Structure formats: structure tokens, C-alpha cells
Image (cartoon, rainbow, N blue to C red; front, side, top):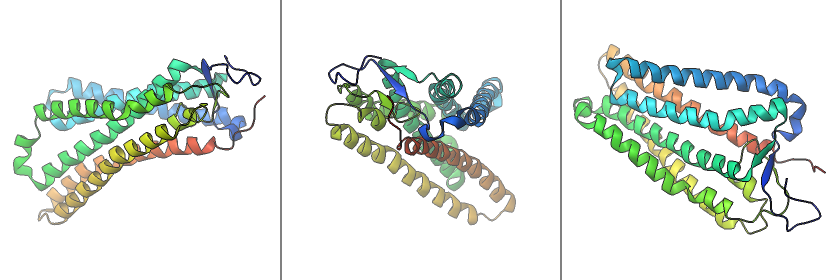
Length: 275
């Protein structure tokens, strides 16, 4: 490591990730459910991609959206979970300066992409149930392609300044990150400079992206639920609830992931002083 407690001007070339500092004796036990979650996520998403790719009848817009969601899940899992498992199993807590901000970039970009994909899936479900006659003309392959391009570029432009602002700061004090991952605020607060601009931009971008999307998703499912209740046929109602219910399960899983990241942030607050 390129820093010293006696030399506050030495620049940092790597960071030290302290994951669950108050529960380090439990790390091997915590790695078991995390490993199972990683294998389950990778296996399920890979299987889903293969099935959609091999089965011609599934080459439809709805399944293309599921494929996009699976790809995003795979990238996020490979970015975060293997690093955390290396910390748990082999105490490999160091991460390079560039590696840290690359991880930060992927996390800040791909998580909002998942949220945007859920919003499009909610719209897909809304059109399918509330306006079924317009579905085939509205939800097409070209629509999915345009939406995917928009999601990628919109989130890149909106979230790129977060890791760029953090990476442009000078880090010349402690290199101990109070987190399992290189979260923006956990890293930026180690800087010798004022980080209010970085914190403000992340706050605004998160609320503008995730906040607005969550509101729109909730509104979509309120309209969907109202339409489902008014359907005359029990069979159609059951099918509609099954379709929208599967989407809601995916959204709840996404919210669970967000809660996990929030929990890891909170768990690192009471970090002990390392000599």
C-alpha cells in the first residue's frame, strides 16, 4: 500500500475493503449463503438465457426484456460477489485504485439499468393487460432494441459523473474502505478534498433515476391491478395475475438486492481503528 500514517501527503494506490468489521469471525459462515446465492443467480440466469436463445417460440419482446435483465444480473453478480467471497475465504481485502473505481462505475451504471428494465417490463405488462389489442403493434422487436439502446446511453450519461468525480479526488490519508464493495460515498469520504459535490450529484441522480422509475412502476401496477379486477373471465384474470405476479417477484428480488447493499453500508459504520 502506498500510504503512511506519518505521511499525509502520500498518495493511495490501492484500497483495503473491510467487510462486516463487527462480524469478521462469522465471515466463513456468511460465505455459505452468499456462495449459494451466487451459484443460484448465475445458474438461473444462464439457464434462462440458453432457453430463450434455443427456443424459437420465445423469441418475443417480453423474453428479450428478460434476457436483458439476466445479462445485467450476471454482470452485477460477477462484479461484486466473487470479490466479497475472496475477502471471506482468503482475507484478500486489497483492491487496486483503478479496480475500485471500475467496480464503482459498474455498480452505479448497471443497477439503474436494471431498474429501467423493470420499468419497461411494467409498461409491457400494462399494455398486454390494459390494451391487449394494441400490444402486437406497440411492443415489437424494434421497440425492445430502441429501449435497450436508450437504457444503456441514458444511464451511462447519468451515472458516469459519479465514479469520475470520486476518482478525480486526492486520496492521501487512510485507505480503509468501510464496505464490502467500492461504494461511492464509502470511498469518497477518504479523500482529502471536499466531497459535497460528489454526494450531491449521487443523491440527485439516484432520486431522479431510481425514484422516478419506482413511482412509475408502482403507478403501472396500480393500473394493471385495477384492470385485472375488472376482467369478466376468471381464466383471463388468473393468467393476467400470473404474468404481472412474475414481474412483481423480480422487482421484489431487485429491491432485496438494494437492501443488501444498504445493509453492507450500515454494517461498516462502526469500523475499528487498524494500526
